[in-house]
Amino acid sequence: MEFTSIPIIVIICYIIGEIYKVLFKNKQDLYKLIPIILACFGGLLGILIFLTNPEILLNVSNAWTALGIGMVSGVSSTGTNQIIKQIFIKNKEGDS
Image 1 (cartoon, rainbow, N blue to C red):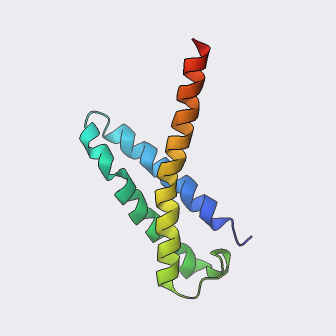
Image 2 (cartoon, rainbow, N blue to C red):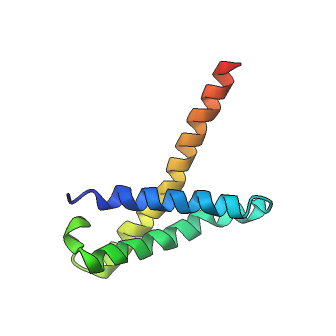
């Protein structure tokens, strides 16, 4: 059960990023803020998990470590988005 919180943070941040893109669909210059926003949300989620149930967050000993794990997890959701995007782009090119 220790490792379940990190994928949860990544998934929640991924969903937040997709919602952000829908809300600011016509303002693509704001898309460059997505990694920063997701890092902040991930950090907040890491601290929230640490405060509620610290043993599921890799047994961290303080809030700073939880913040770091959450921020890295939040930013990794941006990479997850790019992996998914590249898979679907490659599949669309192969279908033609």
